[in-house]
Length: 150
Image 1 (tube, one colour):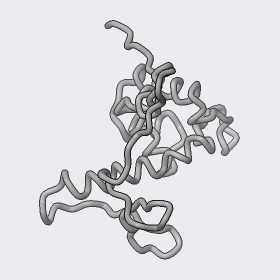
Image 2 (cartoon, rainbow, N blue to C red):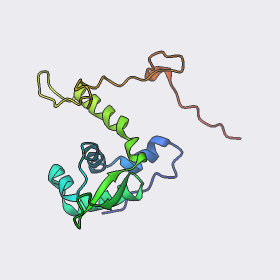
Image 3 (cartoon, rainbow, N blue to C red):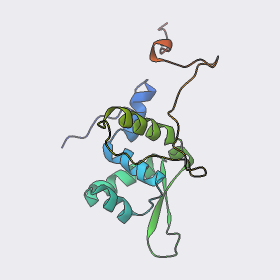
Image 4 (cartoon, one colour):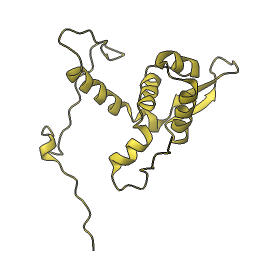
């Protein structure tokens, strides 16, 4: 299989982000890490992904600074994968994908396990974005201000 071209020199932040977390297994590993999974076996059981692919994706996420590797918290010989501060900042991305999927990829009445606030037990409200003035931000209200060439 041909190696894919890196997007890390692309001027677009979306392209660079996709280069790091755009693989389906990477995002699902991150999702599972938010759910408290830490060990290789937990990720493998949850995802059903081949061990070689899981190893490669975990290594990539560690290399990208999204996960850290630490000795197992129970003192065993195993290692654990822990979200870094950089990795935790992906929470809004994962939540946004989840909420988009809930709204568009499930049939009416189809069961969805809700994401809830740990303290209150209440469902997490839909993410909304606002302008500097506090107005609801819509795609038509934003654009990328590209640099002009000299």
